[in-house]
Image 1 (tube, protein in one colour):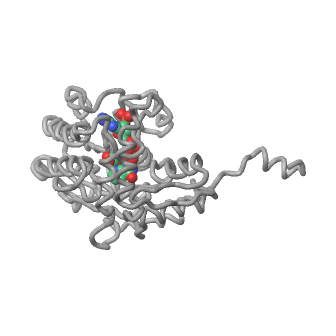
Image 2: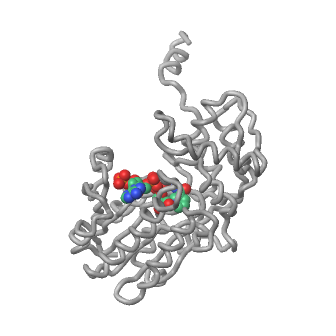
Image 3: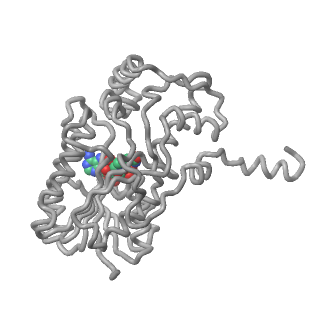
Length: 324
Ligand SMILES: NC(=O)c1ccc[n+]([C@@H]2O[C@H](COP(=O)([O-])OP(=O)(O)OC[C@H]3O[C@@H](n4cnc5c(N)ncnc54)[C@H](OP(=O)(O)O)[C@@H]3O)[C@@H](O)[C@H]2O)c1
């Protein structure tokens, strides 16, 4: 494939960093728009990556930056909003997707890759899934005319730096005896971030993916309780996982919904919207594997690499010198 100039929105995030690194290795020029450029300066070590400070909701900025790009990748997404009425989700997902579409059309961008979520739909029970569904529907409405769109619908994504297994590992460190786990029976098919990045990058120049929406799932299904117990096993946490029933899970979500009223809590750890999203199993309806002939990595082959406690180098040196 010839080298392209690609603009990535949400490219500073967990998935975006893997995609940017892979695009760079393929020889593409990657322009990432970030609202907080300085915070993500470390990404500048990736050759061919340029970080541009700006708000992706600024139409003028989008039009300027899309001027001579070959493709746009929109990865912007939030798991929780500040308020409770869904407007935050609508803004981050649907309104942004709509602006990206308009800017792409006005600047004649020919290719758009859009990140959605598994079971995103206008009929879904949560604001998160509904707004993702509306956004995905919007980008496909114009696909095929002047622009070729492909969307991706992953289950939960794992890998170094994820906010899923790592978050549980962090919480388990803080709760030494018992962990009250909401929605323990919710099911997931976790997918490795490098597999997601590979699907995106391989789809970029592949005409067969034009106009398609791909579910992205890992090779195995787990309940949330199984996943958290796996984290307990890997991290050596001494904690009993107590699965809450539905009513208790709702109560936990309702209480945590208001946790941001506490001055030291910056974002909701869990919310009623998360609780509603979890009522839909995040598993693929058919077991077709990943598109484009990509083989999904097993969680058990990857997660120990970043969840197993790292040996303290000082202690190792002491032991080595017989002083430990
Ligand atoms: N991680 C998962 O398990 C998972 C599963 C299914 C779907 N997804 C979807 O995959 C995408 C990437 O996920 P991720 O885990 O990489 O997310 P992430 O780490 O939170 O990164 C998202 C990026 O989007 C930008 N962003 C966030 N809120 C924004 C807003 N309101 N307006 C403009 N930009 C905003 C941020 O960039 P700046 O702060 O630099 O501007 C951030 O770096 C999201 O669309 C997510 O919904 C993720």
